Image 1 (cartoon, rainbow, N blue to C red):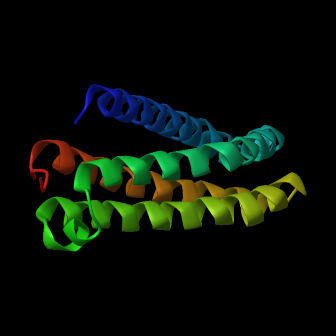
Image 2 (image 1 turned 60 degrees about the vertical axis):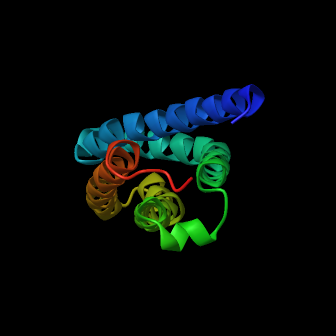
Image 3 (image 1 turned 180 degrees about the vertical axis):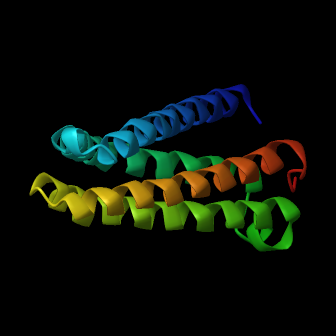
Length: 153
């Protein structure tokens, strides 16, 4: 890979990891606030702000991830014909489920929480717990991609 492409790939990876760190870093406090009735208004505010930030962060994460996958795989066929590609597909499926949960949180639970629905807080906390478990699975897939399976080319 030429030096300019390597620099671009490193920048993509840096911003990808930065966005993921932001996401993961907010989940714990948001869940914790959601479980405490006296802090539900703070949970609603944090969830709302997180949702606003996610409107910019999520597309950037997805784009960076797809570009890195393209750099590493070279073509779509490698996605289904190599161990690396298949592991990446599993990771992508998990990320897809996480994005669905995040959308439900943003569009349903956080607005209900902002309207004062205490039941929404429990649903949000449960959803975040599931999202966290899925993120751990994504991190395990990422660890497998970087240490166990080999690149196709």
